[in-house]
Image (cartoon, rainbow, N blue to C red; front, side, top):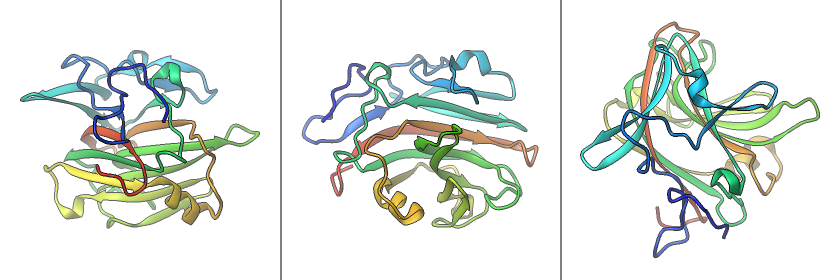
Amino acid sequence: MGSFAHSDARAQQGSSSVDVDRFETYQPGGLPDRWTFITSKNEIRPIADFMSDTERVWIVREGSNHFLRVMTEGEALRISLVNNRSAGLDWDLKEHPELSWRWRAGHLPEGANEKERNDAGAAVYVTFSRDWLGRPKSIKYTYSSSLPVGTVVSFGRLKVIVASSGTDGMGDWKTVRRNVVADYRRLFGEEPPQRPLLITLWSDSDDTGDRAEVDIDDLILLPEGGPN
């Protein structure tokens, strides 16, 4: 198992799961500064440079728990954690083929879906590779406004899976657990690279011009069939 220098990316006692980020070490109202913005030219920039009143992320505290809130109004926003030890992420799919997280929808873009008006209240991306033109090959797990859980939409090198849906209600925490290797095999018809490039958190309301607000917490890497 890879080792993690950051306190939020440590092996959990009694299991072989590994925390990606539980957002507990950041100050409420502050930014999750381990995460970065990656430009279209693959430049890594601080996320503070891209926050505004209509697209931002920040840490929220409820009781003793800290979590991340992502919000956009007519905008699209992404923050990424690069898969390397210096960033505090060391993800080997042979050891940890599964990824889990919790999220809670406060508001989803009205009238959005992943097929036409392609907005999603939030998404967790896994990017596996880039081709010689720099185009990423990714799976995007979305919190959909209107499509049922399990819906798959293909945009070539980007595959979208609806992991949670507003049609099932909002306001409660939902836990998602995905076997990323199995999803990749099913969607791309081949074996994934052993090491993904990065994990990206996304919020998107620019097609509808509406608002998106979703809370995200407890991103964890898991062995196949291991306890959550």
